[in-house]
Length: 259
Image (cartoon, rainbow, N blue to C red; front, side):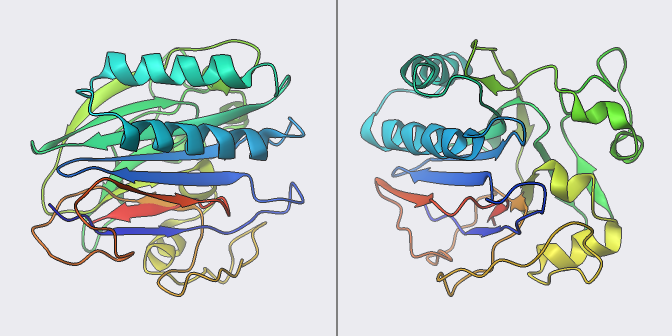
């Protein structure tokens, strides 16, 4: 089974470093992707997100354990236990997605990373809700959330001080690419800018963000994770074969796509 993967990231101006991070692990018939957005408040939240991604990918490609929500939560908890003494006041939002042979994907998330789909000529259709103070009592549309200052207060995240269990759900897969995004995409870009970014074009009026170069010539990086659908194709955008291997992006990317 082959997977096509793409990610894009663009650094903001609120911190001197890009605190987004993405990791991909691929086994023979399944794959795991994780995207994280390090908090702007913790000084080492970018490095914290980097370590979470690296450890989750390393674990995934080294085990043949059947993947369930319970297994992934247990590994997230174990990862937290190993990192909590090194990182004292840091946190990150994350969304983790596992795709196996079935036409479903298992999603675990905590914070304000979202997963959705985009119709060929329409806006994004988001499949999860972020964990924020603004929508803690009742659901809100993502458009309304984007304009609510309460969205910056998270009710769940991967926190160094304590382990908070993620929410989880399953989503059906079809031929439409699935997109995983940080709040820099879903809250700070309008529909036109989102569409341009998905196709690798940095929006002209992208608010606080500035383009970031990368040495990976197959993609330009920015702030979304686009992706995770399977296709019976022998090609993979990054040359990852359908065998146990890993692809980790240490330069903190914000977008991944599996077509």
